[in-house]
Length: 267
Length: 284
Image 1: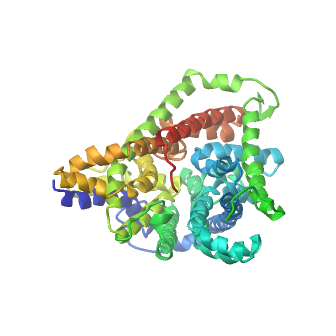
Image 2 (image 1 turned 30 degrees about the vertical axis):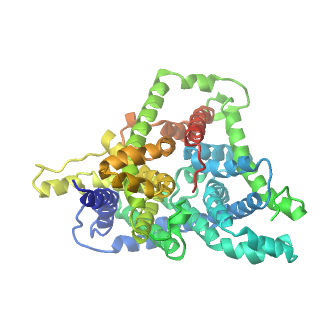
């Protein structure tokens, strides 16, 4: 097979496999009746309405959005000073500190989740939403840490030195030079943490699964009692939301660079 | 800019906040979990402080040994499939025009961010009898009647690969996109076919990255917890499922903690190994 033909065929096939479950779920979410059927018999948006009118589902939507937006903020609030500290100063334990920041993400999540469970149970905050928010904030600290560090590395050191020689102090330098330059990286770190928190199951479940129902937990709980097309609706909305957020990131930022590529300019 | 130890109070303060947060909410929880793994379990779901190896000893029985073996096998197979497909895929991806790359990356990130619940649910529908792929095959006349392919081992493997594939691509993306384009070009100029160039130039140049990715994906799938429950049968339950089962449903936190500690040591050892083979600093 010629190379020219192989690339689109191979990549297309992979794309098809990645897309097919999403297509089926999108189809199922449009079913007019409650039966699980594809292709849908009769198209209707009633299950989309149900997500936002049924109190149980609506509550899960609210919980998920609150946890995702606040925990991403916690993650950023830890990651930004940490990245700044590691970039600005030389300390001997820098590698260990960075390692601590990326560890939650590299270990299998069930371990971190069990660690959180032991912790919150010990201090008596098991089952509270605040516990989930902090847990997710720590769990996803890696994402803003990596993006903000990348942003700091892209700052021209000469600019900082010029400001220093003109007498700018630490705080002023941070506000007027560093912050504006890393803001897009902060935003993308926040967006990554937000989307992943929205989809996270095991940590949320172990910390407060029986009291605070997030959307993934609600779907899994509902799966035990049977099927409702609302699950498919949630899946579709999650995919679309992720695509919109990452699409915006790509539109206003340099996604390949953010993901670690050095691309020659002429591509 | 002079980079030394912090010399001002604000300098120390900026470092203190993240350090305190990570210590209190990450190091302390792990320490508590490690302690609990040695505690003594009391019937009825409670535990009392103690120091015994009973929880670890139980882990080395045939039943849990089999689960461990199965977990390692499943993750190993999934990692091998993902890298076998993902490496050539990522190579082709990095040779695309920038605009197309970005479209692919957005799509891959969207799939990567999907919850295991949603992936498991989607695949169980795709493999189901009433709404699944087999209907399409029946419509095309390739099958007699629709069948259900889920739950089962193949369904579980498909789900795991689906879960890990975008991750694989994104781990391979930095080293492959930094590969000098001149390298394969030189091979081509010297008359090697694209396939030969790929196997004799590209693959050997990135051997370290491939091994590192295999390990990373292995650890990643080791953490899969919902897919074995949604797409597999009870005999396909992995260590991650057992840990949660012991912690939540059997109320045996000490035993769950012991298993988690074991899983953590395995993962840490493997991740440490990637630094040895990788040798180079990896990006995001």
